[in-house]
Length: 480
Image (tube, rainbow, N blue to C red):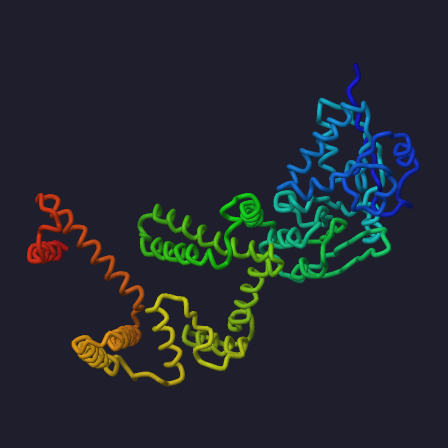
């Protein structure tokens, strides 16, 4: 008994003029017709056809789409004996469902040749693909398929700007001025051939399902890991219920947590113990994922992509290091910092010295940053000896407010005292945030030893009393 049959034909790259007589004959002969998609200029040549457009709209991934289309065609062929399956272009060029049908033992798949978009692309580019040694690449697999390939390459399946962004991100060390060509709707009345650069790759056009990319030459290697990382963030965003619920605002606390954990890992680094690098690698990865998460949300909203983030910070670093990338002389760090501030002031068009100081940073760091900005325009004590007496002054005012039963004044004076302490720390070139963290770690370490003493001596901490606890504290300090 013969197997059910799926007859596959291609509708060419554009209008009916590119469809072969043989394909038209097969369409006319078929009694049960199916279209992969109606979004094609020649789809009207297949009358009374069922399409799979709704599968694309409903499925979570392309793999799910291909699997469902294959199963439904096999079921239809089993029911009717033979069905016709019409696809855009050529059945053997970037048609995953056709490949799946050819490998499926449940049906006999017969493929008829057709003209593909490749022939029109070669004509528009004016190249011989054999002589040019052109490599054909699937845009969804660019990071791995193009690894180590300097070009020329013709990249298909570039149906959306996020695919173009992924491709741009994959070339880690691209200069940005490399020439590329975007070819769209070849053979159609609104055909477009756009010559642009690598830097503008995902900004020059609105990509659609009839878009492909020509890359004449690339000197830089493909950074496959970055693209895989970006794809992971997108997959989780599309398929994980928790990830789907997150917004820029809900992720703020996780961003701060990861940043603090990076600081902890940095402080735990031991130059003599390479094993301490493992924690830093992990925490840097977690922090990087937060950046990627925010970029993925923005990409889905159509606002910006990870490529924009990377390009933006790259270009900013180049602009702010004219002593490296330009002709400005800077022989010490102080000159570099001074130049940086001047350039930043010009770029941001700021009207206040405090513009750009993040108000969401920890309060000690915020106070230090504000003081530094004021100091840059001369509003500062000449040295620490001017700042130190303010601590005693603010402490006395705090005592007066507290003893006088003034809650609001107490809060105000306590803030002034902390601000004065930060000022002293700044003049001593000590980061108050790090100093307080170190003091807190020291307190925690010592009190944990007090807890151990209590446990060893069979006494509950709550029952020990302040005199005993203070004595144990002194004992721990003496040991240290």
